Image 1 (spheres, rainbow over the protein chains, first blue to last red):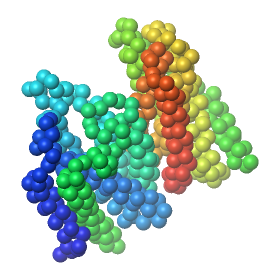
Image 2: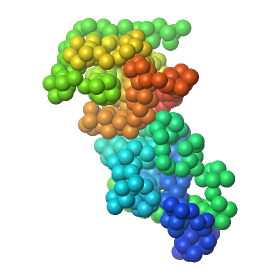
Image 3: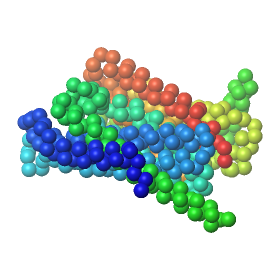
Image 4: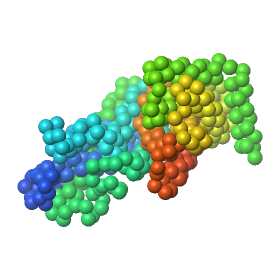
Length: 233
Length: 220
């Protein structure tokens, strides 16, 4: 068992986020109702996604600097888990939106088609498309070192382009989504103090869980690599 | 100084190749002509918004086609030759500049054909021309870098589109929005200038990234 301190922290924080997230008091807002608790899951997923993508970039930069293949394995694993969290973020967001924005039975709400134009959704869609392209690029190069180098370059290039777009698009299009002027949840006044008590631990918890999954994946891939090399000899 | 002579020599080589192998250039022009003709046949007289978005989508596809060949045409042996005579930074800068010039020219051809077939709903033609040139420059820069990346993989042409579309979305949105000034949509004071500034700074960012990252792709 390699259950180190941060894995225990992840378990404790997520248990707290699930139990506390569903039971602790929340502000009562007319339109949101109890769905406001989704903040602990939906927003945190995308936070964790961005953190994992950032780790992936850091590993890509490290790979280009050192040329060690383990950094490439790390970069792709973190990107993979980040993509998975991004899809979960989409799913939780869609559930949330169907209660607040786009109920087909409620004519006062917008259609799903118009919701896809939400700037935040476009930003998330771009991020997921980029990493989809990243994995296709990886699978289309057979040489291991070349694959590592080319995908690291694309990873860095795409990430550097993603950030301006996340800043630009919300300022171009109208939005229903909270946080029109910048990044929601980073602003301390946006969130009720009671919710912050669960929100920040939840962000850390989901990120740690993502990192945990990624490290398992990395160890597996490195073992496969070693086995392959042993076989070669 | 030496870098500058290398740069001009490489740029001259691109133009020479273009005049010697005219089929590629005419191929792109024909591609534009047939695309615009198909659009003309499928939509009678588009309103200004449709015209604008169709124009930019066409421009995007032209860009993929025109820029893709810039790295695909370089055979392995020739890349090895460049490797021995020049530096990656000079090489990528010459490619970027050439593709920007190519895209500027293709933008003019595209605009001409659009005007000929589907009229010109712009109220300020000069403004649209300027925005078009600015946009083509950005498209050319992004796709040059992506062509360099895709040239290392299999199925290069289709891969380039997959890699490029998510990255180009913000620029396209900015351009479509900015183009509306040429259709006499009223903006708040200073907003168009802000958008132009954003586009220019994005272009600078791309050149910067290309100069940093291309040396890693260059080694084979």
